[in-house]
Length: 183
Ligand SMILES: *[C@@H]1O[C@H](CO)[C@@H](O)[C@H](O)[C@H]1NC(C)=O
Image 1 (spheres, rainbow, N blue to C red):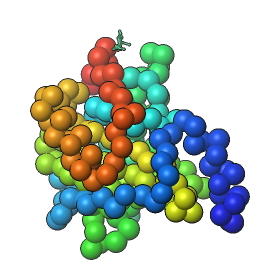
Image 2 (tube, protein in one colour):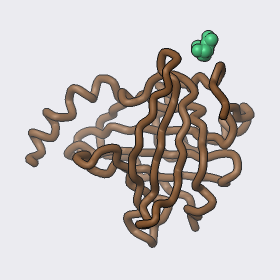
Image 3 (cartoon, rainbow, N blue to C red):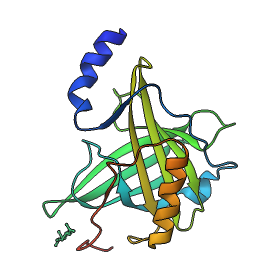
Image 4 (spheres, protein in one colour):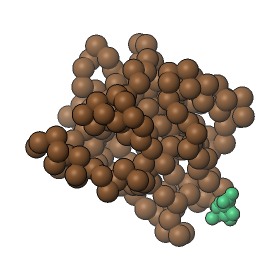
């Protein structure tokens, strides 16, 4: 696919996303990332706008498949209906296990899923950035918690870490995690 057609393809998405001039910031990721400990359920605490996400009670569940890929199940409530989408994550380079790729369709390329930091038991900070011809970039960022609510100082820590990596969080919004159906 030519760069120009890629740009045309992406333009309709751009308005709903966060985009900035220039190439992606080069964020540092979690050293010695342990995928096994990372698996399981994470609740979305806050995110940068993403057109593919809406509603409340958003959570992700990561499980190892027999073929070594990771099953990603994102779910949430939208107008009181459960919405779920399944995808696949892979470690692309075993030397950098915190740099995962995630895809939600056979036809879509793997998007970045970089774990900037995680203690595995309470907090995960995830960043995703796509360079468009190095002219501009579209990025996503998530603060995830093992519980639906994180203490304000944990959220502050997560935000400061991302800001320190040059990530613009001015459009970051909290995810509504109240009135959820607990299972
Ligand atoms: C969060 O969602 C619940 C249930 O849908 C709703 O009652 C509440 O008003 C929402 N809170 C905010 C801050 O939007």
